[in-house]
Length: 195
Image (cartoon, rainbow, N blue to C red; front, top):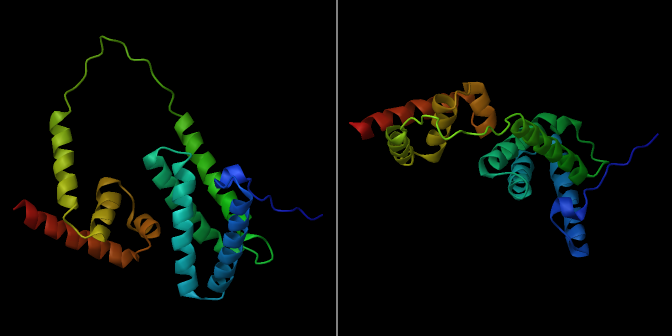
């Protein structure tokens, strides 16, 4: 029994015209060629594929999720594509394969959001003053903005977000050793900026 991969509808792709569908087909073929080359060890083809997929995924999720969730879904989808790249079969349409992964990650984000039900707040609830924390967060953002982007990102992921070195490595594409070096150098520069 042969199951045909479902091609995403024009609405799902954000391409409501016939020209958009042709563009999707061309893009899917191009990505398939890049993935096939990557599977044979062509690193340049793989980097190009990931750059193009990153742009497409950002647009895809921006229409479906709020900002931070869209960013997280994009990173999750890229990581899933990377981890599942060996399962792609060149005889199948790449676009349908990538779309399936993107949709699964989108559904995961919606599921996560639905776990947090809205709570009704009563007028009598005491609210703690968070002014000092907000000022501290703004100051920290300003300091991190003075670092190299790679350093700031891994410090946010590991030191502020609690990710492991290995997970931060997977998210950023930096090696574990480079993540450690960027954290060390970034913290050293932050210390100098604060003094």
